Image (cartoon, rainbow, N blue to C red; front, side):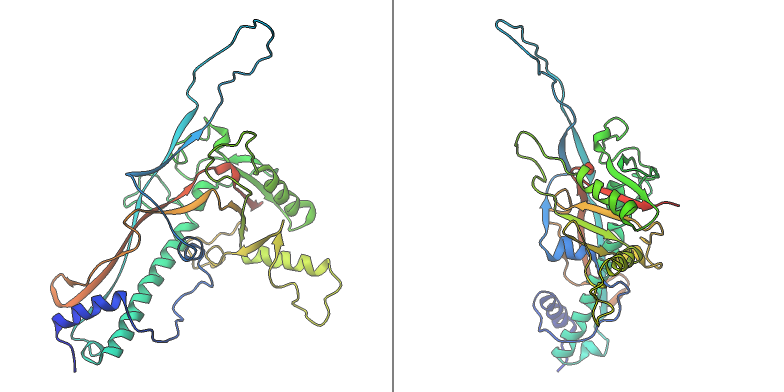
Length: 351
């Protein structure tokens, strides 16, 4: 027996939170993997409060060291040693819609549950696609309305300089990164290099140097944000991964009967190299033709949900001017945060 409209609204609201699992096949997504959902949602979330996302950055030391002797004169000074890094929260929203007069919603509860689950799943797909694009892109300016999240290229900026160095300045039309000028504070820059060939003497040598030079260890232990061994994540396009796989094959004669033996996982300094569909797919807004290699220290980089505003799903509401239609909205607030840019790097293929 079909549910009445007011009963249907209550039933849908309950179904959004507790539903019987039904099976179907989803061929709606274009990308093979969504890094954002894997790193920042499936593996646990991070939340923070406040009007902005901020943290302290120590940019200098007092300089009080000196040699001394009996009755030596002390040299003391008080100076401002820190500055504040700050980024604004951003909002994302997705939704799905139904009409109580649709045939499906006039049928039995099992069909209704299946249809609601599919539409809810579609809504999360929309969120995953949108956030994957945001992860690998950055707003063209800092004053956009609505504000967009500051993705990886905002924090890890490329340079045309061939040799490795800390040359990552400001992205696009931005004049700071998290409110801190990289012109005034060079230690706030990320590492960069360019390469020509996927070879030991070019890419691999610079990549290895980047890993070593971006590894900073404090001589005096303190409550350091992002402390510990660098859990590197290496991300690139498929053409670079494929070239690395060919390098493995060429360097090993013991292939046997498996011609694709080295077409699986590729590691660099003990860490897997991932190809990013969003950077590889020409239909993606994040598509990159410069064959980038991002070295991300995941202890320094994260997506932070604003506390209490983490993928909040609202009850069905009546659509404006459509009294039999209902909308279900999901709102989210958050921002990307890189607490220490110089522990990350990017390599680009030379033009």
